[in-house]
Image (cartoon, rainbow over all chains, first blue to last red; front, side, top):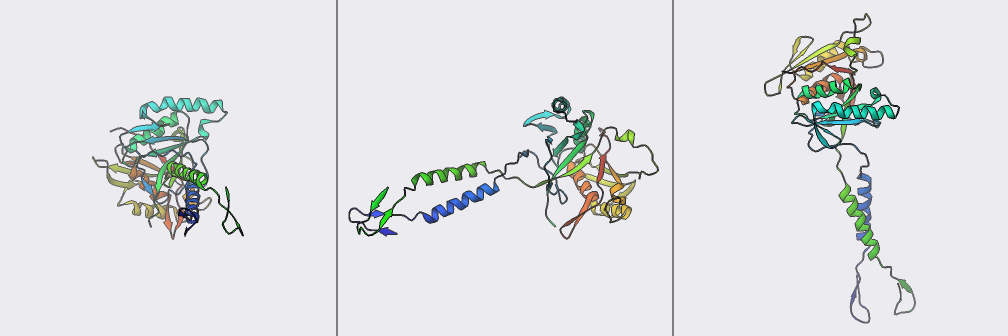
Length: 146
Length: 161
């Protein structure tokens, strides 16, 4: 809406719709913002499953091992060979014992690429078992197609 | 900053919006930049202690595990499925066979709850096939509801070659 003042012409823009819109956008981004620290790596193409519905509860202090298509493991953001994860798991085990937690109470989340070899997933599970871990969560992408 | 209108009848207070809009745009940029699209993921829980093979001594009360053999073609794709030595055409048939074996009831103390499925997959088999097989034995989706079947799943030790 333009308003003519006595002196030089002064154009006033009505800011209300823009501010309304901006606040709505902020509200939207605040709601969709995810604070969870779920480890998801773009290099992994998870296999999909209709039954892989997101769990209701949160797994307490899980250890995430991500197996790539090429057969290496992404552990805490770095690439490690499958045979070398034992040393890292040993360190996790020591930390857990220091915190008075049993290794068999911890869950190992296995995020394996759908194109990876099953034998390599089994190798990871075997190494974890040798270190005393026995709870595993095989992660898959939720597929809601009917 | 207040400004007296020329009429002198009403006071019109003009608020300087610039700092607020600056902050609001900065907030919006922050939320846009930190937005991480997380795809929905779910887990298949497996409890597999290393001593399971030794502990699984023959017991009158224990139901022998159902063995599902998944054979791989040279390129890693699925070549054949067999349940307790009998060939199975596909994963749908595998699910039907499991239902035929344990029944549709999956409540507490049901046969489905007690039965264990042991997967024996070839080393080179693509992992996606194993997830399909686990999906086939662990349940089905009926009218949007998940009907659970087998909950106890384990793997045979890996074998190279």
